[in-house]
Amino acid sequence: MAFRSTLAVTLALALAAPAAALAQDPAAGQRVFNQCRACHTVEQGGRNGVGPNLHGVFDRKAAAVEGFRYSRPMQQKAEEGLTWTEDNLRAYIANPRAVVPGGTMAYAGLRNEQQMNDLIAYLRQATGAAN
Image (tube, rainbow, N blue to C red; front, side):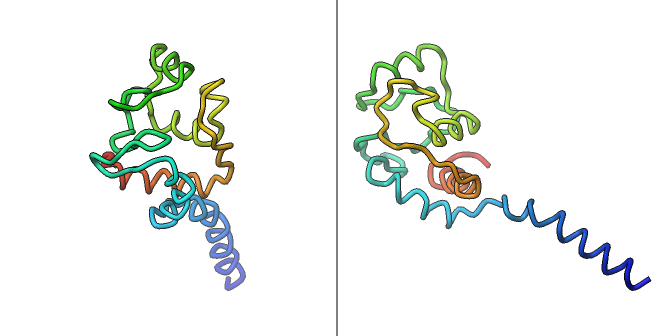
């Protein structure tokens, strides 16, 4: 009987581990965002840099920040209806050139799934997105 209880607890922990590994940590995401900070700000009313201010980015149409000069490929994607849903942001952050071929974002992409989850959590918090 003790063996079954130990086995059940071990199995439960093993199954829970992958879910825990994918948990979102905004504080860790802020550290990931430090890679982005050279080009982007997140504060409401924040300045545009090399990249546009990201406040309000979730569910915003692409190329919609006033005063920012977007590349022609990004403008074309916007004309085609690209909106920054969470799925589209994840795809763009993972591989900007795959989402906007010929775009000017110099970032090569974020491949680490945990860092992506953390970054998305941070962006939701920092950019005023609804959870």
